Image 1 (cartoon, rainbow, N blue to C red):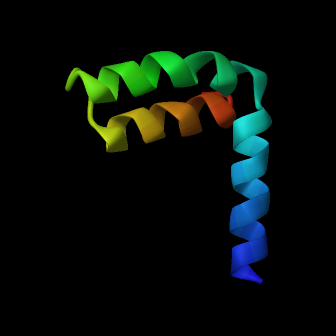
Image 2 (image 1 turned 90 degrees about the vertical axis):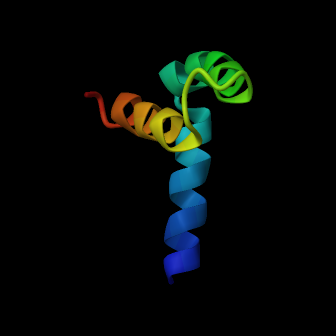
Length: 51
């Protein structure tokens, strides 16, 4: 049950237009050490939830 929920949420997150626009920049920020993976993930979730 939980794996289905996780897979569905992840698929929806990846399809979200605003999240898709952010991903490249956030990945670069993580790679260069400008932000942490946790902070980047929180930012994606904030956008996903409309905050």
